Length: 146
Ligand SMILES: [Ca+2]
Ligand SMILES: [Ca+2]
Image 1 (tube, helix red, strand yellow):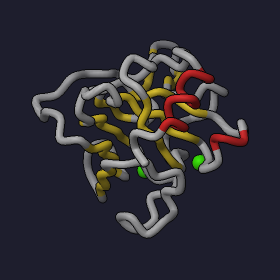
Image 2 (cartoon, helix red, strand yellow):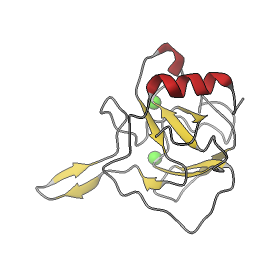
Image 3 (cartoon, protein in one colour):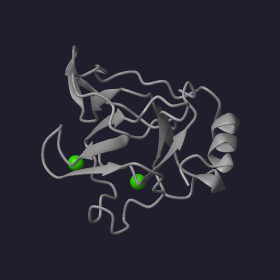
């Protein structure tokens, strides 16, 4: 399921948009293990790892992770399918809901951070809505999709 033709078509359709900006993105000492990792907190709390696609994080894998992730680490192997697209809802093929491309190796918190002026900044889906506590599914896509 991970290396499906469909995933490639979806990746091509949405192109290279959705580059990560905003909250800090940094490499980490933890190397690739083939999984997308998520935590309910900022690299703390309950965690889940997926080696394949999961368009419904409310499924039984790791319990229900729907709309709970507050940090991500893409530790996928850079084997040509190393990027991940996360979705606001679990039905990306319908074209509804936001999405965001998570580059291979990237690790970042989704929580809002304070910025000068008393405002907050936070990572978003391509439609501007917050990623924090709103990811509902993901799919592996070709490396360099992001
Ligand atoms: Ca959370
Ligand atoms: Ca959601």
